[in-house]
Length: 85
Image (cartoon, rainbow, N blue to C red; front, side, top):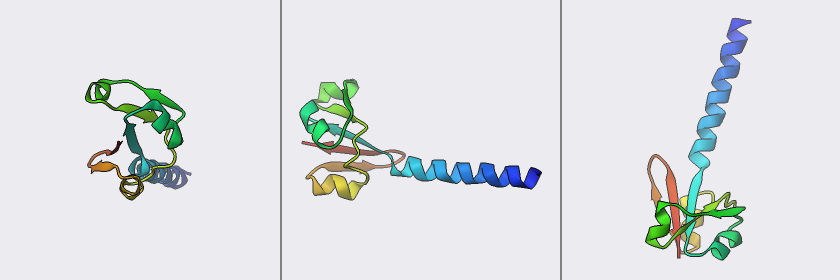
């Protein structure tokens, strides 16, 4: 039983790591642009002072290549960020 528990925990960790790698934070100039990328809402944070709003839940952009196809700038590191506009 113990070995099965370890295998289940390992599988959960691997799935979580894969999801974290696929997570892209998207920022756009306007809230309407965010909605066009599938965002559920727009957030306003420190990035707002730089002229961008966060696109919370944007589903159309899942990688740097998706970002660049929409003429955006992509920064990839510990997290992936896409700036459009």
